[in-house]
Image (cartoon, rainbow, N blue to C red):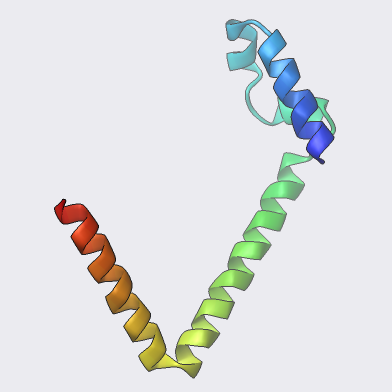
Length: 82
């Protein structure tokens, strides 16, 4: 897969700007052997698994989740105030 991304990157650098803009979507990826539909489906499945993992963890330990949320809010609040 890494070789596919490398080939796609090199191919994109070699193309002119107009051609690159016309071809920017899935057709460019498919030209280099990358199935964007399959990648999108895999990403959707992984996000669903992560969401379910988070829901299960919050239900199992609600006070720990609340503590993490308060800590994250405080850090982001202090960071945003600067």
